[in-house]
Length: 597
Image (cartoon, rainbow, N blue to C red):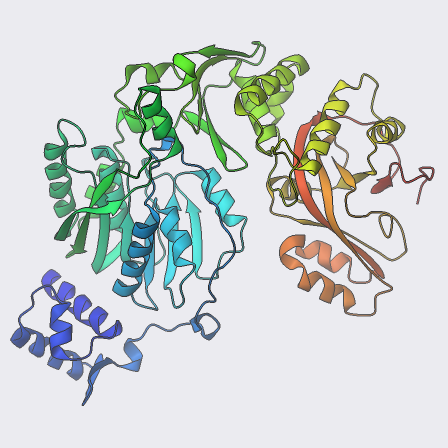
């Protein structure tokens, strides 16, 4: 029964991919003899699953999965520039070179059904490449880096593309709603990672599915040959039978962290030298789920250690920090571990790895004191909101951690997103303005109120506004899920024609502190609005507004609207401010007195 299911899936898949004559179908069916193939085809015709004509065999209409007509049209080419974060050594993040990425994308499309499912495990570069093609099946990327997935999801992905954050090494596999037809895996080159990646592929695929996986070459380390055999044996136990092995088929880019490690040892490499083997498996049967879960639920010591680190994405650059983070009162300190602070290897066998607390994308490493302060400072630099526990950190320790990080990280854009011209130091002028305002707010010794904020903005030559927001909208702006702030009203009240491009917003939570500052990249004003105009304005800007249904209903009778495009966002340590009136928007320094509206 298992063998029959496997054969049927291969035959139906071949026909669905455009192979209609018996010779063409036979080439795609793993050596099934044409006489046996003919018998199976005849039986499928009798069952009404396929039709036969002078042009060969075709799927019967009932055998074609139903597709939503709105989704069945060819996807437009994805031409938006999408930069992945810089690879980080702690993630074992070697990425395919450009030609390999293209070859793999073309292979996946050729091997898949238009109405089928593609599953990518840890291959974000191929995920991005597939968006450039037309007629791509539904494609899901599963990756353990939350920062990478968050960055991808800040873009408007095509409707049939999904990016999911799930750590396959967490002892719990990802559960898919539909089985995949084709899977591509690129696990870290260690046996325990192959175990969980193969387990996930076996769990998420149908019988007959193709599973493509990268494999480390025989000279990768002393016991590589033995490890390769064990990986192949485990794949067989998962119902994955090898179809082919192509040596050195996969080319990898040499990441910055490896270049730096080699350079610290006196070796200069200016070419992409690393190669990997490509193995194609066919899933021939469903293995027992109990065995799959047993393998995945037994992570190694190395995998468990991976979970102790927090990651922060500052522009495109990832920083890793080892926990725990409960030393709230300890003063921040950087401790040098290696010559020039560069780890001279990329191997996890290096014993001094255990001493690392702070790890940068370029393989610079440090031990540290004051981990809680460093975590709070990294959250700020990465554009994240600070947690309640960060209130236990003194202002001095927080500012000291920021100072130390800025010294070692250099001129990186400290924000969620930057769109604008950069100054001579490499930092966007608006971002520099936000950082300067942030520093002045921290240095202020007076209790904050509207008058003090007005004075600070005036001294900094900033047109400032105090914007009061309710949740979840404030957090959505901070994490980049809401890019347009709006004000709908029945009367002409601020910020209507009171805010302009280049102004700075101080974002305050209703009945709470100021938690972020942001620049204004564009402004649009509407009004007086006619009936149904409000609904139209909201609909045309729905993605950026990220409004909830209760708000849209409450504002349907509005006569005026202000839409403010958010530019750069810089979270700040919560700043309490004395404000007792009910104004939801305060213009701080436009040359007029602050008054109630």
